[in-house]
Image (tube, rainbow, N blue to C red; front, side, top):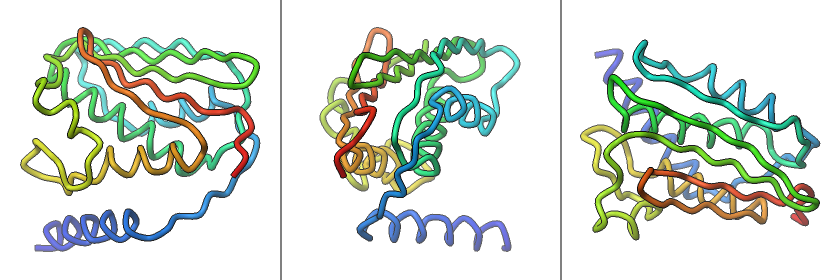
Length: 166
């Protein structure tokens, strides 16, 4: 019963976090540290290979919120792959932007779900609120960035300005 209460509490908090107007605490952060911390928060089955190629570039962002976003997307990638496959993270940068790509060898997202993937309350999972990716998109856009997804292979691409104006 305690686990059920914790699960329900987490879901309520997810909904409240989404509908509130979250504030950003922007600080200069190492993207490599954010990626490493996020990877360490996800449990990887033994047969899933993880490839991380990240430059140690700096970006002004809300480190706590970005860590949650990266952890969420990495966790989704691991779930998609299942018990055997590959998850790859790549960080690249230009003069003004950084790009984080998270690619997995899972089966991909069905075409009919591609346009709904970032919609609030949309989920294909038995558990969850359907707010994870919608919340990720909201926070990335608050940073002045964007998030996109494509198939073959499934790749989530986050682009953030190095110095957001918000």
